[in-house]
Length: 277
Image (cartoon, rainbow, N blue to C red; front, side, top):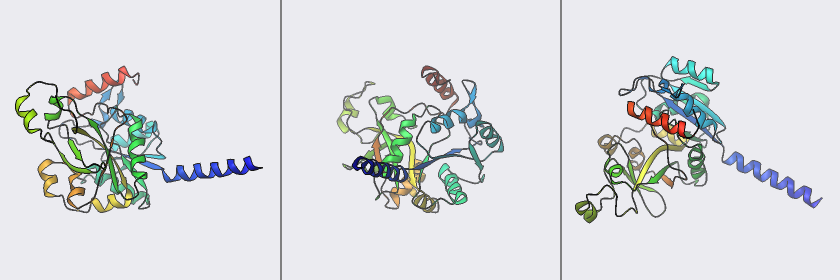
């Protein structure tokens, strides 16, 4: 009898924990990319890129997956994949705006954790989706969380397309930048080799976010912050308004994101090497 009650309580606690950590994934997928028009439908290993992103999300612990797009062609492809896609406004400036529309239309409550899986990340490890959601769930004082990965290569650190983040001792973001931060005064002046001699503190930001739904609806109604406009980094809006962003060190190296035509080939090679195409 004692074992019965012990097992019943354990089952109940497991159910409560599962409900507490439940999260949804929204994948913003914009057809009208300036550099790569129709990017979500580009062929990678015989499948449109959005199919790979959906597959990565399905391999996570997400309770629901929705693609938020601006084009009927992407909606039609998602229908064939068996994933829900919502046709959202073409006037949205960012994926965050698109996700906020989904939150409104679906009527999700303010506490709901929503993970933004960008539609150009076909090789994103599903474990990272779970990690960023769990990080936010474990920190009720936070409204937003993201991930970072150590940088050891000088070229990567100085690449303006690679966003860097600096955190405090508690793993809260201090600043995001396209510049190499923190700036090592002596090492950067004297060392011109490709390999960094000092590696502590340099982190590559991974564009994977978890939000509480109520916060995201508030966030998209704020005007773009001056720092955001200078760096072209939307997350600086949250810091500008005094919000804290939790940053966890990613448990796995992020896959290739697709921003250029060259990235398409790199992503295909990475997926092929992993047996995913």
